[in-house]
Length: 149
Ligand SMILES: [Zn+2]
Image (cartoon, rainbow, N blue to C red; front, side):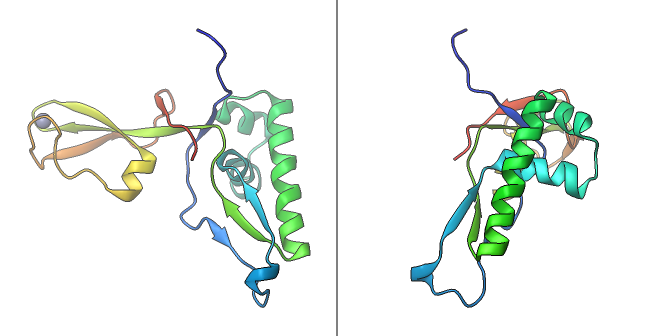
């Protein structure tokens, strides 16, 4: 194995990914980009209210790394909020969790969460039965690497 980018585990993709201040003409609008893993850091720490060590564990990074990601996210949000900039949430180095499905005939397959949002599966890809169920909604132990956009 050669060099690999550091993937941060992410359980959630925000549905709304663009925020724009009211009353700022487009020509004057500046934008800050918040990578997905920074949005996730904010979510875990500030919305879920987890301790930093637990956040770091969930994202599979060291505590100093988590602290750095969180600080960067907060600085960008403060910059956008106080300086009237738009926020675009996209990209970054992250690993999406997947949902695992099983059909009535026992076939199992995984669907990346990102894909789930766009097009939830309705049929088994192997036998085409609509009799399918989710096995593990938020897999903690399995993930599939999806490069951020
Ligand atoms: Zn099947």
